[in-house]
Image (cartoon, rainbow, N blue to C red):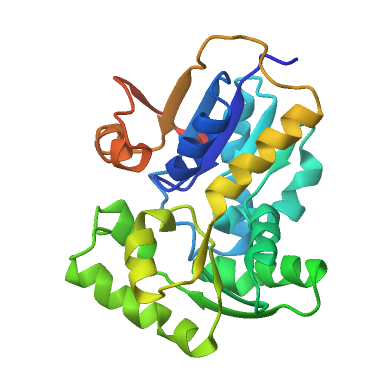
Length: 269
């Protein structure tokens, strides 16, 4: 039993889709969330910059004496091997859990992957899938406009801008014939309805949800769950514009975030 909080971070709002699932599977845990809204998106950053940002985000969360970290960011998860050795607590990213889920779902062994520029360039999902099965064939596409559009509320069906861009990004997967698509960014579940319309019958893997399930299983195996029967607390923290985060975050979570979102000077970490 371990009553310390869990830390979660993302480049902005997207990680809240993972938070929603984490709250469902671990209702008694205290959670500290950090969204780096002042530097979103992470997808176009260099590896050196991503490592710097990830270290600062982690150092902030560690100031709360956390027991584990969920990296609710597809882009940072691709560099997890480069920073995991610095951690003395369990750290879960979205890549491996999503790859395992996709491999279990796919019947024709054709799996599509969408993500940020940095995620797709890393080849992290392809590597993880090859470890699981050499028979899996992949097709990937970077979708750089998805994150800024979702962050600005442009993800609803009927929005001609997001629908046009999504059709352009996803057309190649129809030709590829995949039966499973990894949504390799935690912003993308907000686009589920649009993606399902363009790719009917394709199973969608929610990377944030898979990572949340994985950290739940890990904490259970390590006997590190919170022993309280009370509902856990949540602290929301951002690097910029807490009012906007609070307003839009309720859409991601499916309910209001609460009265307070704290602004953090992340450069101090």
